[in-house]
Each structure stands twice: as C-alpha cells, then as structure tokens.
Amino acid sequence: MSREKIKVPGKVYEELVALQREIHFTQDHQDTIKKAEDRGYMNAANWIRQNERAYKIGFAWGFESDGSESQGTLRDIPEREAPPVRRTISRSPQTIQPRSGKKSSGSGSSGGVFAGIKNWLGKYF
Image (cartoon, one colour):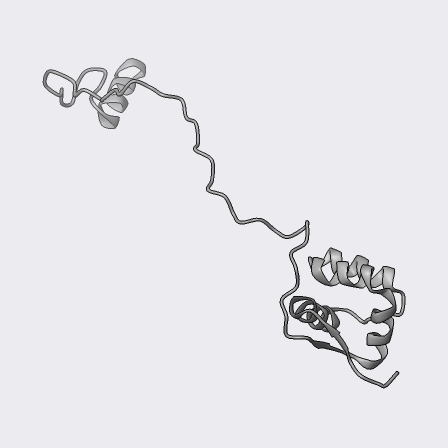
C-alpha cells in the first residue's frame, strides 16, 4: 500500500479538520469518536465508527476530501420550526375612565403631600 492520504467525504473531511484543530487525535478511536460527538461532529464520528482501520491509517498519513458530499445521518439537526403560538389569558378590554368632578386644591383628603402634612400637623399640634 502506498502512502496516500485517506479519501473521505467532503463533510467528514471538514469535521475531521475542525476536530483536529480542537483536540489532539489519538490512536484510540473510541476516545476520538466520543470527543467528536461531544463537539457535534456527528458525520466524522459515524465515519470513524464505520471505518476504524481507515481512520488509523489516516491518523498517520492524513486525510483528504474526495470532493463528494456525505450522506445525511440520523442525527442531523432538523430545520428550525416556527415558535409555537403563546397562549395568554384573555381579558375584557377595560379602559381607565377619568374621575368626574373638580380636583380639590389644598384641603381635603386628596389634596396632595402638602395638604397631608398640614392635616397631620393640625391633628397633633
């Protein structure tokens, strides 16, 4: 066997290169599969699982893309769905009605802060 790089599908190659940048490859393919799955590289993990011998050779000699797209796997992330409609409690539309009558100034129970102080002072002094 000549020393050629191992050809892998395009998506697998991209994930193997990204994985190589993030971790140190080991000869223990089970460890590499676990690290690939933990980082979300499912295509690379499945390829390594199915091609253990080719991975070990590629570990030493390198990998290259064969230019094709890899086939989808069962663990591919599906398209994002529209968010569900939020249910809220329906309430009858109520509006705040203005008070009728004049606003009293200076005296009475609703005369403001100064009127309250004045009433308090009048009670106790």
